Length: 421
Image 1 (cartoon, one colour):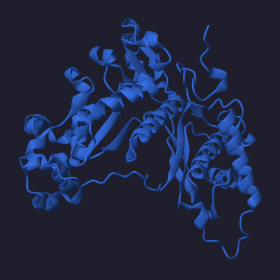
Image 2: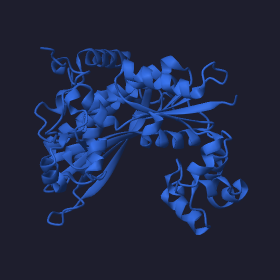
Image 3: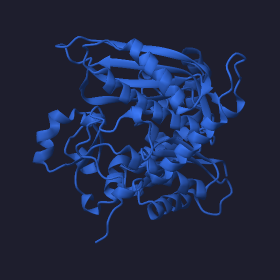
């Protein structure tokens, strides 16, 4: 038996997270909004049946949602991230080779000589996630990652599959002939336009094309997709996440910010979040970028968009050192009188914390900083993010995101644990 890949895809993930602690929401139309309650970014099946589209502005649909009694939630990324980790942990307990592809998707290599048929293996995965986490998933199985991705979309849409589908050779031709080429994993708009110009419109036509010719006009990635569609694994499973090239932390404000003091609070907070991500992955950063912008949609205000970069004396993940550099760059970038609606920071020049190249002219960073950051992270892991913070990131945070319909952080905040009466 050849190697099999399964794609485990959480169904309507953000909505499923909201429903997990509120069973009364089952079979009700539910939507989840983006940052600052701007657009609809997740919909239950019931909401989709009402004709609510992905990415629609909330203010345009507000009356419609109220009229159809649609339940609305602001994004709760703390809850979604924690439940995602739980799903991935269950998968890693079941099989050793797991690639976490996104917050709601993972590829799993199924054992080649398992006693159970692949469909039964898929059902076992689905049942275990439902039992241990409570999040419904669809499982698509194929001889390659690309075919598993196609199978997962069938498993999700076809109710007769009961959430698990194996893309066997006997049904491949029928299914691939119905898929437009732009829906294939890894085929973008520009690539699909080029394929269309050469008379290739479906997945089946791409499967039957010449890989050498495809590589000549579209490069190696698309040629690999052709081989994958033919059942020949060409995209390896990445069980170890590839190292980051950068860390970005940014937000849109709930209302325009004009004062430098408020911008300093926001940038300080973004740096604190990004520094924590660095330490969690045992990385350090050599450069820090700060960026500011006004709304690009409003024509009644002066516009500004800019960034500034600081090169650090030596790579670091110490929050205080990064905040100091960020404040200097922000002061140089800030222009008085502009109503800024977004700010953020980006850390680049990342490297491993245990393999730093020391600067001959700058003293090595004190071990005291390392111990201080370890204590800070430990306290916040135990008592919740923000339990201990830098004063420069502010207390009231009037600039923070608008989240009028955010559900409690049921799993990550002691104060918001569900109460059983």
